[in-house]
Structures are given as structure tokens and as C-alpha cells.
Length: 225
Image 1: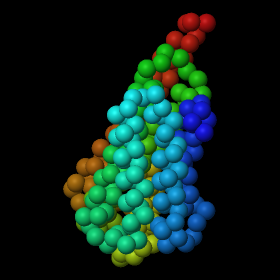
Image 2: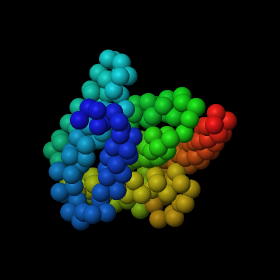
Image 3: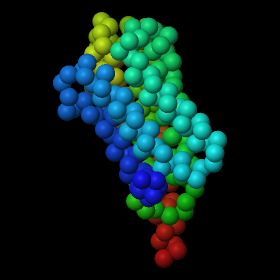
Image 4: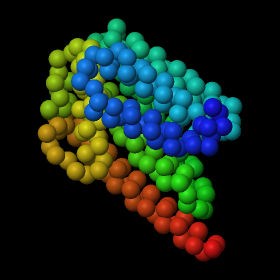
């Protein structure tokens, strides 16, 4: 298993990120998603991220494991404490840090080699989806502190409501970062407007930097040949 995760670490991570963000396409029961699917998703993501940190040092793996435990424990407790705003703050904050920690390691890998291969391509895609994950949980933090901070997202709490908010914000962050912007969900406070603007700029910046990195690596490959 360890050798498999090390050999196909970015492919496995990419699959885990996509299924976490978009598995809702296959589900209609949001209560089942909240109680069962989300914790399983986090276990899959924790396992999938293991390959990225193999041979990265003891402390990095300790930090990653602690964040992983929190990322699994909070969703398991969500059906019981999901109505408490402080609990949602810690849940969303821990997940933001968890994904940011992985994103930093992915970016370190993208910048370092002077060649381009399938790992570079899949790591690039992982970086994009990690940016969406961080954006989703950052905005969820603001939503749970003030449910009126967005228009177009329902404000009535229930167990299934957490899953609906997550999927609405996955949709919202994806169309914001990709600069599509349909306008059916909109920020409703000055801070969510500014954060949305920052996310749009971040998405474009990542795309520009990524294109520059890939062109540089491709040019370096051709020069060596």
C-alpha cells in the first residue's frame, strides 16, 4: 500500500479530491451524505494525502496526521454539534489548515523539478482542487457566523443543511475561481464580497503561474533533448 501511494500519490490524491467535491452528483439523500459519506470522504482524503508526505520528514508527517485526525473527527461529530457556531468554526478552520498544508507541499513539488511528466500534470490539477477546497471551508466559516452573508443559500439549519451548504459553496467557489460567475449565489456583506474578489484573483494567479511553470519545464525538457 505504501509503495502504491508513493508511486501514484498525485493520481490518488486527485481522485480523492474530485470524489470529495463532486460525489453529491450521485446522491440525493443529504442527511446520509452528512452522517456517512462525508466522514468516509475524509478518511479517503487522509489516506490519499499520505503519499505526498512519504519521506518528507518526521514533523511534517506528525502535523499531517494530527490535522487528518481533526479532519475526520469533526465531520463525525457534525450531526450532534452542527448547530453550534463555535463547533462549525473549529471544523471549517481545521479543514482549511488541512488542505492548505497539502497545497503547500504540492506547490513545493511543482516548483522544484525542471522536467514535465504525468506527476507534474496531476499535481497541477490537485493544486487547483485544493484551492477550491480551501475556499469552500473559508467561506463556510463566514456563513456559519452569519447565515445572511450570502444570498442564494438557505438559512434553516438541519443535519442535511450542512451538506447543502457545502455543495452550494463548492459550486460557488468553482465558478468564482474559474471566473464563470453565474450570479445565482452572491456575497451579501462587505467581507464576503472582498473575500470573493480575492478568490477570483487567486484563481487567475494560480492559472497564470501554473502555465508559466509548465512552459518553463517543457522548454527545459526540449533543451535537454
